[in-house]
Image (cartoon, rainbow, N blue to C red):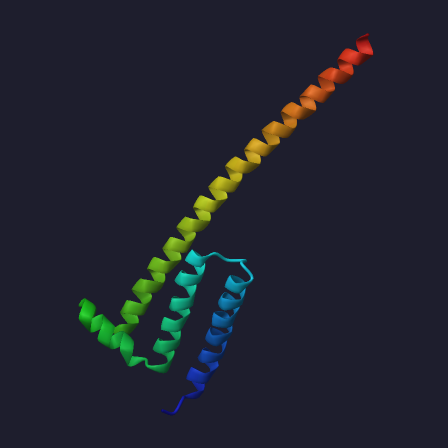
Length: 121
């Protein structure tokens, strides 16, 4: 099998990302769910780069006209899923920040009341 220049250029970053995902998992900076989502995805991307006709075969099995259409549909689905996850995480962080700010405000209010109470004595 002879690799084209485009395949070589595309394989290098995919292998680097796979190594990064594995390293982050070993360092426990990402969980098992993230690892088992991302690592196979990058393996699949590598397979598609090395064997571009696999998308045509898969598309045919799924009743989709072209391999490029399959890649486009899957990419859109993945991006929508990632946007959904980011929105959920941002909403959770917003609630957490609100809770922390309220707690700090109540503690600060209690200190202020104690100071006013001591001054009036």
